[in-house]
Each structure stands twice: as structure tokens, then as C-alpha cells.
Length: 70
Image (cartoon, rainbow, N blue to C red; front, side):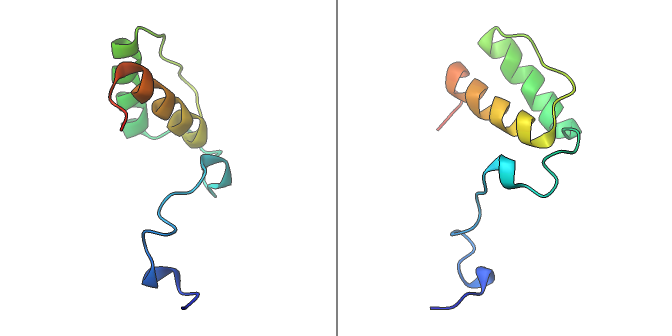
């Protein structure tokens, strides 16, 4: 077994948004667009001004609510 993360790319592919190095930056355009779509489908108001981490968590929650989640 090795400590090289490239040897097991799936093992570290998901990281808690709170642990992201760029999590405090404003959400990306792609996140905002998808979040708007999910908000409409879930019948909820779109939240502007979220950070990348907050947007990711909101997307996860709305995916579940709208039926788009896994």
C-alpha cells in the first residue's frame, strides 16, 4: 500500500465542502446555473451570494428534494 493519492484516485475523490481550499470563494457560474434550475424544480427560492462550499451543499439538498439525487 502506498500513500500516493494518485494510486487510489477514487479514495480521495470526494471531500467535504467545508474542507475545500477554495470553499470560501463565490460559487461558480456553473453552480449558480444548476442551483437556479434545481431551485425552480424544488419550488424553492434561489439563494444568490453563496460560497462554493455552501452552493455544493445546497445543490446536494435540492437534488434530493427534486428527485435528481442518486
